[in-house]
Length: 111
Length: 116
Image 1 (cartoon, rainbow over the protein chains, first blue to last red):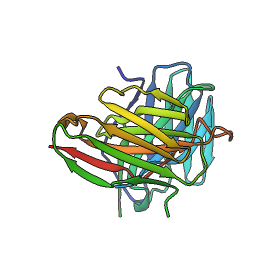
Image 2 (cartoon, rainbow over the protein chains, first blue to last red):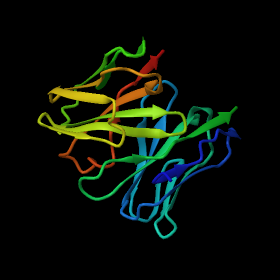
Image 3 (cartoon, rainbow over the protein chains, first blue to last red):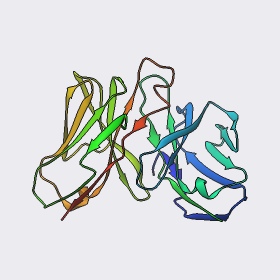
């Protein structure tokens, strides 16, 4: 079993919908939780990160972490066609740990 | 110009051939990484380097080798390419001197490698 699991999708939604992307993990040492966005034929770029449990909001994006359930989510409000991309969750522990990535979820937002 | 540059962007090679993928960065970061991306498997770490004299194996290093020629350059070699090494390869950097060193990696555009 992989340390970080993510539904590959694809997830297709109409423009304006609320999107929920999720990851589960097994390593309780993870403390930093990231979401990367990868457009087609591009490298991933950090979208946002959260330390430990709780919520973090950035514009239309909200990241949630539930460490007790080992479950993280990314919500996208008022989704736009420009949000169409692959979203990868990533996690790391304390000093010295590398990023561990989920498999990515492909999102398509249709006009 | 891109901060993290990978060459070539696309490459088709034959089984058994040696091939080198190159990465250079202008970000001044000390840490560099090579990842492999396969559909549904996310990014798997091949090798990483914390500085020129510090090179470490990642989770899938078998069949690969690396060289850190300078702080700005990190190359990945496939000594004898095989078809199951067909994948998208990414170089990435991070800066140990910033608070985001373990949350943010900066990726190149990727190299699409096909081994036939």
